[in-house]
Image (cartoon, rainbow, N blue to C red):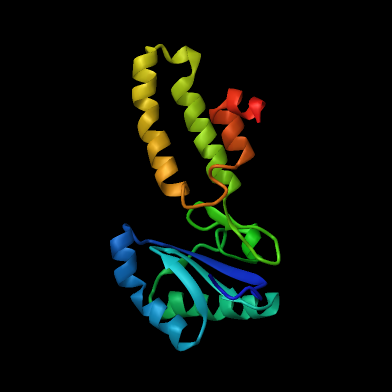
Length: 173
């Protein structure tokens, strides 16, 4: 977990890299540069968060790292997806942090919304499939979601998730 005194975050979305493996090869030089500068960061493929202590530092780092990516690596940074913000205002790989003195990992609202929309689609009355087929289609989604987001302490206790997937269980508690 990064330093708890972190107050701002810089997010870069580098465009033009076609796969996570290729992104890791291309952006390895970025990792080395961030380590050389002493930044705290986390990166998966082309999604990178750099943690700094203030908004002013975030703006400086964003400007210098954008310059490094565009000039040295010859990649384009997506300015619409890049921002200086508090960690709890941004998500990374479907997770975000809570705004507390001891931050906790939680499932990002966008991930919950996409999950609910997919479940609604698969369980819709107008879909015209049998219950058996509906369950067959729904199982991989539920297993995948639980496998990935089960790492979050909020997964089992997330009120929207419990109410949405298990309405009778939510009522009885």
